[in-house]
Length: 382
Ligand SMILES: *Cc1c(COP(=O)(O)O)cnc(C)c1O
Image (cartoon, rainbow, N blue to C red):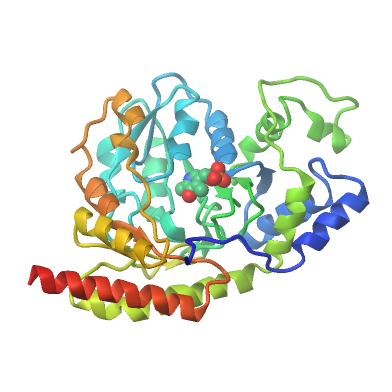
């Protein structure tokens, strides 16, 4: 069986974990946490990066920092991971779902303005597959209506929009280092702070509601309880693993690019014959090649293709069940039919195996099977 994903060692991850232990600090905010945060800040032009336990935790911290009141509205796509929405629902806000673009599966920026009401406070663009949302338009809308922008860049680490790193453009940004992402440490994430106003409170919320970070810097003579926080720190053992990955950022990305481009070139004839759809990277966007998806012609054909690939030893998988169509979505008042493009596209997505150690021979097998399925299903429907 060719798996969909496989965690991998890119360099010195295990050596650095051993080093963290011998250095005598495996809790939070030690040597490796500093190396990782400084690297992300400098390389991606982010004012402050805080390592956290997951992308979900980064979104939760971001939602708390937005200081929302019950009933405030947050605009986001429905085609996203649950945490994008649940982070805001936890603080009493209501997600307002906007349809997506068929070319990138990102939020359709031309439909955002119509969703704004006087309760709107935040826009959450989700950079799907490591391809940027149309950030100039989104930031312009946010400025005109005085809204905050929280980028869900969980899939967007080391991807760029007009030369700017994803996560560095909105007021706040969220990264994930979950084992299914590009650069990993098992479970992990980072909160990116681009608006200085949020730095002090973010440090406090992340550290149990205390001003311990100020104490460490010698700015106060003892630390104490100052806000309602929780523990949103990453253990040094994981930061050590992550540092091993970040040192290999470029080689990990170029390996993914090779895989992406091979799939794209090999499947182009099927796309030209109208048998499937391929992903698109707009000219302003530099991808990190987080995932490679294809679009079947119908939802039914998608399900058949998944079964066919699975029967032949390839674990390809679908992606998000749109949030508005979930049980929580209906509790929030949404109905099937509310977001026609999201519903159609989500039902046709297939993600192909994509991981560092995927061999050329394995990739050829995947391509051959997709070819065989599409040709066969074309001859049946002809
Ligand atoms: C992976 C992901 C998350 C959650 O990240 P975790 O580290 O798994 O908590 C949130 N949003 C998007 C778009 C993701 O892909």
